[in-house]
Image (spheres, one colour):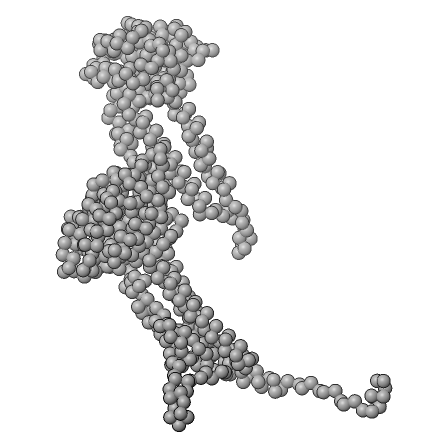
Length: 638
């Protein structure tokens, strides 16, 4: 973009402010729906999860845009002099002894940079150097003459700014006046501002005041007040300005919203029970483990059809069904058995299934909250965490850090050893090798996580090799080793190479690789594009295959919740099996009822309740039958 087209920040914000992009709190409230709280009859605003996520994403994009703008303003000549507006510019340069003494060379270099980057696009340039009793003004038609003028500047005298203003303000063709001052003007800001206001009355002239490397606070105060009074713009530059230097080092993450006490110390929790994977948990809580498989319940009363030769009858006889108590039922191995249907037993069995399903629902709810929503259950005793900090995750670094915080607080305190490896184009490790999982190390790891910055691509293989070859170099000697990968996209390497390596290192040992895929909102085609890209479904399919190849679990989640989890899927499968068993029970009873008539209905009623009903039936008043008609009543009915 040409500097003649560059906008001031005020102009730029007309199209890029939160109001213009409709990202204020008021805009968010308009997207909600007012609902009535049934408990206290008060109105509340309800938002769809998709709406909030989209709004947050747009806010993150705006923050990134503002950060880019600030970084741009703090580069090159813009950092020293700000943005110079106007196309007919007058430049007043303070060449007093204080301003152009020891720092003359740096001052000339910065002025030459200003000419080459900004002033070269102006239509007319006027240069004026001023000292106590002398000033020189030049209209320089060529940039070479302007550069030569800068190189010939020499310090002399004081800073008579008022005299310079009296000379330059007579030039009616100027539409922009730039004052560069490095020492305190001889006149006060009140005198200078009064004079400028009188001379510019009815005239459009932009005043841009700049203080350059001032050694005390007086010149900046004078020039700032002057700019404020005349409606101009003010810029202060100092190479020793530590705030400005630190600001240039800030990353987009510095502007992202953070959870409460995000940077505070960990609140470490000690798990009160031994955590298991869902597959391990079902070994003691599954239907088969609890002897609640339908075939286990029916087995004592299930009989295979028999066909035998009876010598006394001299013929082959087949077993038959007792029509009122038995049904034919297909067994799990495909054979057909004659099953004695006992409705009270099946009724009790269905109640046990219902209680078990509710237990499974509680397990799913537990898996869907806190750190388990992100990582699943971390069950191994020796754990290495691999974290994706590629540049495409810049807007999600707070999410990644918070995810690690939850893990360190909730699931790592009862481990034996752990380590964290972050990877972009290069890898960063917290410790050279795994260390004990004690509170001091957990707090140290969290402080290290807070220092992470997103850079480069996704060199996953380097991080994986380092974990396997250093942290797990003796994996055959130790039990319960586990790798947990948190990533947002496919790695730099080809997937067949990754799968082959994973199969080699995880085969024949207890080492497992678990994948936690954090699904983000794609990438901005106008921003940073990842080195390799795949659609969310393709990415999930790839990592699902890698996790299962490494005997691990796959967990896929996003800002709105869990999309897929092996831990949850296996519980859901067990729940579906329980529902299927219950439906088969109902089908057995219904089929028997249709065959044996209505007598079966009472079999579902408990014995005590059945006795009570019979007693009531006997004590109920009997309906009297009408008397038989006599000959006289018959005659009257004719």
